[in-house]
Length: 150
Image (cartoon, rainbow, N blue to C red):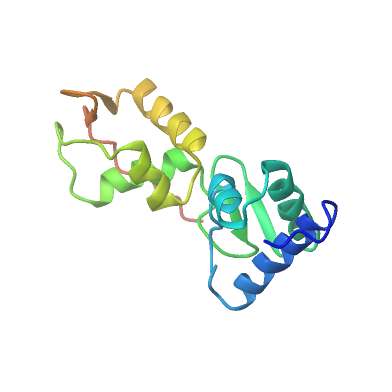
């Protein structure tokens, strides 16, 4: 990212992201802040300012524990629910290896912090636990989700 001035750098990043959204290169979830920092060669505070500017314009929205999304798109449920649904939908069995933090970050476009929080919640619920070696394994299959109709 060319640096015309330190104050204007976040606006350049915001404009670059806006163009990627308009071109549908980013159609739903935005990359993590760490990925954006690497892509644009800027600090976290610059990325945060760029994201805040886009949010103020209504281009993107933030969902706690899930990340940044193009406004009006994406799965807004907490990450732990989405990961639990992954166990339900992919024919996982008790004793199967649970995906790594890296795999979950990539699959859900979430930060490592958000993934670690979801894993901790799932461990607290007794769904997953330490497996052989350094990985985790599925201890219990999650109950089917209740659907409410009105």
